[in-house]
Image (cartoon, rainbow, N blue to C red; front, side, top):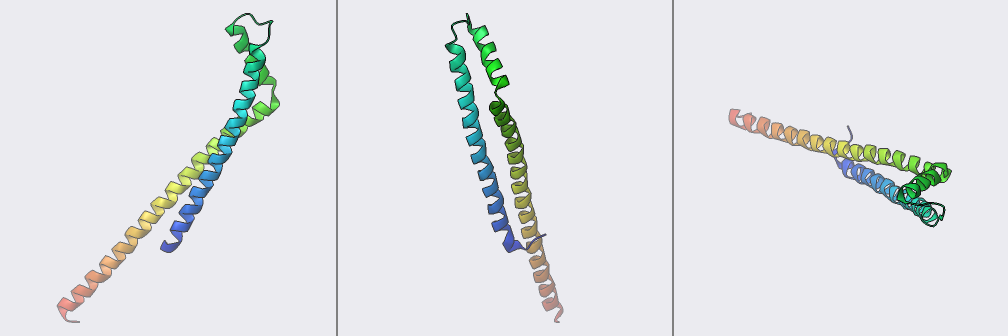
Length: 123
């Protein structure tokens, strides 16, 4: 367990990591939205497609063969998992900090109790 005064910096660093992952998630989501928008546009203006079902199928096909889109979706899933783990780490540090504070308070209370007991006895 680290020293009590090191926890705030460690927690701040862990929260910063969550924010960095969140920023990466937004960038990847923007990229995915762009790919999906392009697929929607291509399907919408394909004159060979007769109805919405055919357009949706064509959109799906376009996205399925787009390697960059697939890579972005994989990255999105990985970053989502990374963010969940980073948030869990922040909570772990916060809980450790709470426990360390409680242990410190307990030690102070025990020292005060011991001191008062010695005064009553006259030591």
